[in-house]
Length: 276
Image 1: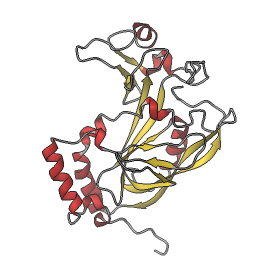
Image 2: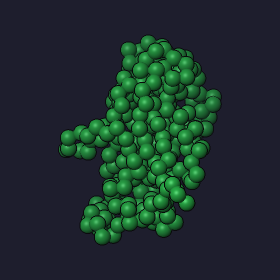
Image 3: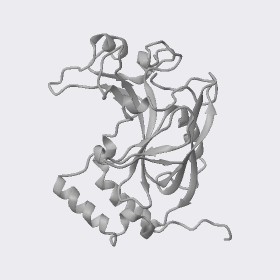
Image 4: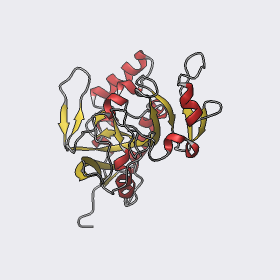
């Protein structure tokens, strides 16, 4: 049919091209190194203050600023995360997180002692180090604080979506964190896709919006680009198995990265489900 999008072939994805010397090198090096971890993948940094460019900064290289990201979302995972800050502790790992948005698990130290201030446990998750997010104090509005420790109308516990995006010219995916203020727009977009969201090529770009409080922020725009041939879908499933342990242990961006983006709303006039 005229105007019909041509399906993407397996050979158009560099990570699946056996003739690309980088693929053989990657497989060999992963074997020698004893596996691959989340730290081996480059996180995409979201802008703050309404800026409209993503930051791609591989270790040891000069950052690139990209107005769009195009690739195949290998996996899309929800996360709910409670970070420590000056008011409840310190550290760059979450003190509590959820991978299903239903049940949260408090971080444990190696000796299985709860590594969270006792006052937080009593408020958030009384019991055996886990609890239902629906009952958590920090999953309620008006529990957040800003960078100066002042109360805000948002939720203290943040919600995000983690997308491991395999760009067509790369051999490893990049990690994209869709912040709370963009989740609604993302969900609305993928419901219109003619294929599964993890079996197509998508484009992420940014649109400047204003929060209910009049603050500029960058909202994700998600666009369907084209579908994949069946052979490409099957090959991507095999490729995804290589990274399955990374996907399972994925964490949302740490506090120092979260401070780079605008956390104040999705343009709807309602506060986002965010941590500050």
